[in-house]
Length: 250
Image (cartoon, rainbow, N blue to C red; front, top):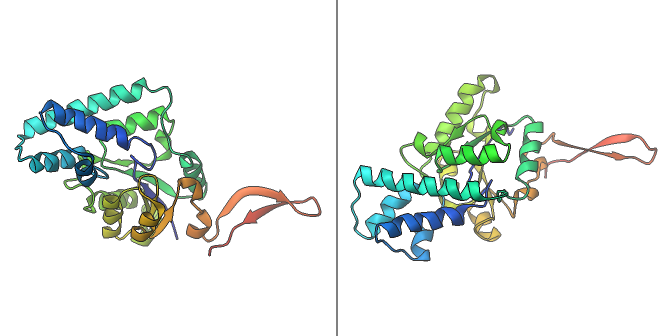
C-alpha cells in the first residue's frame, strides 16, 4: 500500500529547468566555456549543479579547484534567486497543488528529493505556500552522489522511516515522481516504484523507462495507487441521496 511519495522538484513541481540550464551556461561563459544544447542535454537534466559543472568542465579539459567550483555554484544560485524573485507568478505545473492535496487527504506522507540546492527549493515552496505540504527536503547538499545514483532516494526513505516509525515503511510503500531519466534510474536503483511525468520528454519515453507514465500530474489516478481511495466528490443518486464515488483499482 502506498504510504509515502517522494517528489523530484525541478521539472515536476516547477517548470524551471530551462532557467537552470540558461544560468549554468552563463556561469560557464564567464569562464570562457561554451557548450551546445546537445552537451547540456547530456550532462545537466536531473543532476546537481555540482555534478553538471564538473562533467561539463571535464568535457573541455578544464580543471576546477574546489574553491572555483563552489564560487560558480554560488554565482548561479544568486542569479536563480534574482530571477525567481523578479517573477510575478511562478511556473508551477498544472496538477501539482491538486495532487498534493489529494495525496495528503489519502494519508500519504510527502517529501522532496531533488538535486537542487536547499535554498532554491525553500524559496519556491515559500512563494507557492507549499512549505507545510512536505515533511522534509533532501537536497543537493545532503548527498555525496547525485542522480542517477540512488543516494537521495535512499536517504529520503531513511528519513521518512525515522520520522514515522509507526508506519513500518518498506520500499514498496514508496513512490517517486520524476521527469528525467537520471531521476528514474535513481528511484529504481533505490527499489522505489516511479511515475514518469512527460513534462520534458515525450510520454512514450517516460512509459518505456518508468513504472507508470502520465502526461501531467492532472492525470495521476490515485485509484491505481491506493485501492481504497475515495476521491471525496459526492454525487446524488436517483433518490436524491448523497453517495461517495469510489474508484476501484485496475
